[in-house]
Image 1: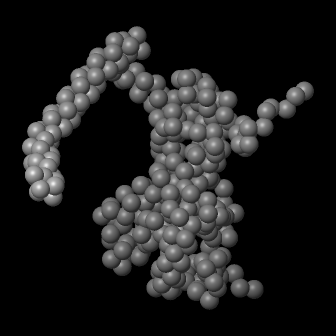
Image 2: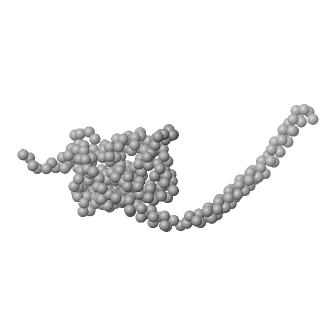
Image 3: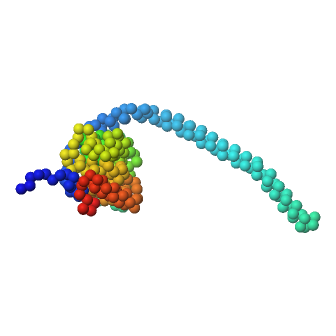
Length: 106
Length: 193
């Protein structure tokens, strides 16, 4: 009887995976470690719950300022565009008027 | 007793516990960890060479899940969501292993060197991991989940955040790559992968 073990390199991938699938993972318990890490993270959280409302209000205030600045910038751009566009419209209107006058023989 | 109203969504039995966790209930999270750690360890076992690695990766999965709990939606089962996080943890671990000087020695043809010093391949899982460690991380993940975890390709695609077509292409390339590795290392390649 052949008692020599089959060399590993003579296995096929299917045989290796079949054997591997039959192996169960070791039993582990990470519950305590996870709990400790979460508690540690919560303890390091810089914003205590009681002060969260005040900080939120400050953040909202600055958000409001940023929003106002953005609106102001947008209005400024529109005014500048308008400043450049109004004379152009005026010129076009005069040209149309002149052409109309020529056509009517005035 | 009246049945819960049919919302058209599959009822996840973990949903009440997850909602409790979302309000900061650590005891509820303890129960979720206890319940799902065997399943998560089952997935990560295929990517860890040592027990300590398995514990670290399982722990990391549950920590990331805790941080991401506000984003959890009851559309998919909690375990499915958890497995997706575990797959990402495994992928990062594969990338780190790939970048380590030891794994580069293996790539350069020193096949007798084991990935973890002092560890020898005593189980088929170890042997499979050693073979798969020669593949790029994304190919390794796909073949590990496909062949060792026997996960459907559609589910793998979902966990990796790629399309099914993309997963099929990656799996095809990974099989070709694996075939070459097996041949180079003297394994039998007469059976289909």
